[in-house]
Length: 181
Ligand SMILES: [Zn+2]
Image 1 (tube, rainbow, N blue to C red):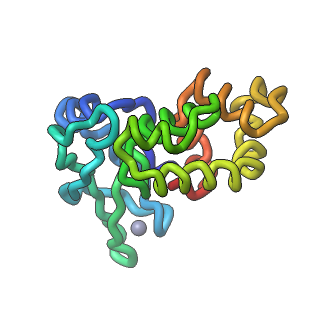
Image 2 (spheres, rainbow, N blue to C red):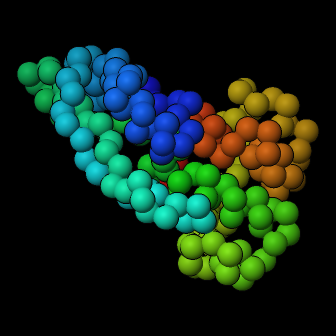
């Protein structure tokens, strides 16, 4: 089960979808106990509109929460649109821009002058991708076999993010219950 709702690629789409199709966010069953039905349980707020394009005007962004109706469980969970990174302040699209820039040979200094995240943050993202690459590539093989021909990790991710998107690749990992940031 994925905690990410696919194919919601921008904050604007997410805000629209919350009004027009809120059922899309409701998980089929509880993540914790595995069988409880879920009821809507309000929203919590996040501030993901930041970075190179985001001017903060869309913040705060509501994220739907759910509560398990099973009497022995009663735990809550939330569901994110595909564009929002579960554990980072910046959207996947911002992270993708940085990582693609680095993969294409731009320097950290150059990118941190252009973009809002601090140089140390950009460096952390880069280290994360390079260190986790082997495991991630292994888990992405079935869904993206055409990327197998890129044996260098940097070629793999440059091609992967160009053909698909970082959020799509991360969604695929999340579906396999691999923790993504
Ligand atoms: Zn439950």
